[in-house]
Structures are given as C-alpha cells and as structure tokens.
Amino acid sequence: MPAFRISFGRIDPEVLSRELADDRAGGFVSFEGRVRSRTGGRKIRALEYEAYGELAAKEGRRIMSEARRRFAIRGAACVHRVGRLRLGEIAVWVGVAAEHRDAAFGACRYIIDQVKARVPIWKKEHPAAGPSRWVKPVSAAETSAAFGEKGKTCGCSQSARVHPRGR
Amino acid sequence: MTNRRQQPAAAREGRPGRGGPRGISRKRVYVRYFATLREQARCAGETIATETDTPAALYEELRARHGFSVDAQRLKVAINDDLTAWDAPLAGGDHVAFIPPFAGG
Image (cartoon, rainbow over all chains, first blue to last red; front, side, top):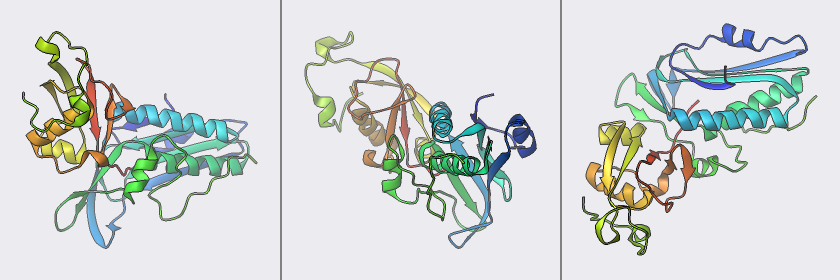
C-alpha cells in the first residue's frame, strides 16, 4: 500500500492506523481534516473534491519521502479523499508512527501542510444557499510558491513551523 | 485549426516539422482539464489536433475555443504528468494537463 494515496471511498482511521502498527513506535500522531459546516461566514452543505490523480500521487510520494528524511519516524501514511463529502466526513488523514513524540508531531504537521500546498486537489463548496464555488488558495503567491521550493505555506489558520529534528 | 491568438513562444521559426507541409506540424495531443477549466470546457479531457508547439500557445488556442476565464499566468501545466515550463516543446501523443490554482485538504 503506497504511503500516499487518493481514495474514492470513505476514509477509515482505524484501518489506516492499524497499518502503521509498530512495536518500536512509542508515539503515534494522526490528523483528520474534516468537512466543517461554516467557512467565511457561509453555511456549507457539502464539499466536493477533485484530484489530478497521477500528479497528486507523485507529489504525495515525494512529500512522504521528505518527511522520512527530515524526521526520525518509523512509518507514515496519508490518504486524501475525492468526491462529494458531507459535513463531518474526513477529507484527509495523516498518520505518523515514531519512537518519540516530537518526530511524530513534527512529521504529521509537515505532511499535512505540504499536502495542502503542493498536491493538486481542488475543493468545491456547496453552500446551504447561493452558488457553489471552487475554493481559492489562501493567496495566489502561495500556489505559485507551492511547487518545487521549500514553501511551507498552508491553508491552515495557524502558521506552520516544523522542526526537522527528532526527539 | 487556425491559430488566431498565436503566442510569441509558439511563433518561433525553425522548429522541425512532424510530417506537416512547410514545417507546420499538426499533432494530436490529449488535454486534461480540472475544476473550473473542466466545467468551462464541459469535459474532463479531449483529444486535440493542433499546430501549436508549446503549452502556452495550446492554452490560448483552447481558451479561445472554450472561453476559459483563467489566465495562463494563474495556471500550472504538466506534460505527461510532470510539471513543465509553458514554452516546453509539445510532441504528438503528449498528455497535457492545465492546472488551476488548487486548495485541497
């Protein structure tokens, strides 16, 4: 099973974390990105995700290798769902197993931030009222910086600051 | 297909032709669209016969045809699933993907 993949069906965190089971991992950190009911003051009914599958898989695999190089982790996986998702459903899941928690937290944060910035996946909001629309990246500069370089930008409200260091 | 809105990059002379007369190569490429572009093109992909030599020129040609609202400057382009420069050479059989700004997660 590749460490990064696109899923057309429901994401099951239990199954995914079992895949990362490891006797030597004293820490396991996971992140779930879920469909929330409000964004920018609009009430959301559903989100629709679309991926450029081939390029997403390539970029996703690169991110997972980077995480393994930068952090002292035992294993990591990331699954991004596509299709139409209802409120509360998991759109993206990241799990990291490491001997120690610092590396697990750091790698998990790194992976989700990089995935959001670099993996070609689009999100369309279907609001309770009004027209549906494709969600724009936080800034145009972000997308241009997204590919290639070390740009650690993300769409999260907090700023990303990861320390490429274990323990 | 005529190039009504030829870009300078595509207007370069001297590119070897691919079987076409007078160096004009008419090639078939497969084009993929995502998100906004897919909706505006009303399809996820199509085979295009084109005389354009670069993704930049191809995009302008397709933009004229489909009325795309997005400027090329806001897009990325991939040939055969690798990101590439807008003035990279296009070859027959290439898969070209135009990538609008994205925001997953």
